[in-house]
Length: 289
Image 1: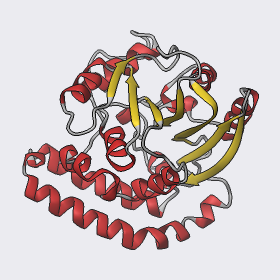
Image 2: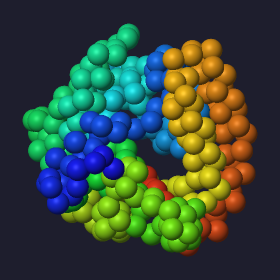
Image 3: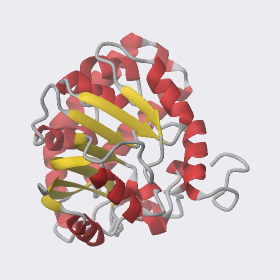
């Protein structure tokens, strides 16, 4: 956590903006990832998300909003793969500046904005997505309300976030051993998501739950964390500038992830059947008016 940056000194939205201005999420060789779109999936979480996004049956001309887009890398990869018309919104001004400056091919609109007050008209988007956002927001009910407000009738909403029931997972074990698993990404434990509460909130706001899955329990999470730890070291060594190394690293990581993912996901069954996981995904459809 940056020096002098605390929850008490700022309101929580401002804290999140300041934190991610200074600490953007780690993305190894973003230029290569954007070029390849979602044909290059270098870690288990990307394999999982790609399968869920494919179910949306996105097509050229669909208007898609990502709430909490960060530096826009994943959104650009979605655009590259599916050809949608996309808008990304994030509270971090520096992240949006980076996203706007690093565009190739089909352009994406990036906007500075708060998830609690989205700067868009009602019924503006056919698809709204939100990955790793909701667990950063204190007023989660309002955030869900805003996402459903800007979604068109019969539009699709997909939320990927952190699960309150993470007991016995790999991160729970790390926490029990004394590791700080929250501050590295500006998480607050009491904001982890109660999935049953979220389902009720969505249903009360006119949404039909189409799919719900738990993800990241132990073995899958271990592989994901290992790959990102290797990427972190390479980033610290300044190796993200070496394109040839990036192609090798991402290629090997992709091969290992695709090879091991099915078996590791099966091994995680013990946790998932007890409804324990670090993360989850929920897909829902807005009822027609």
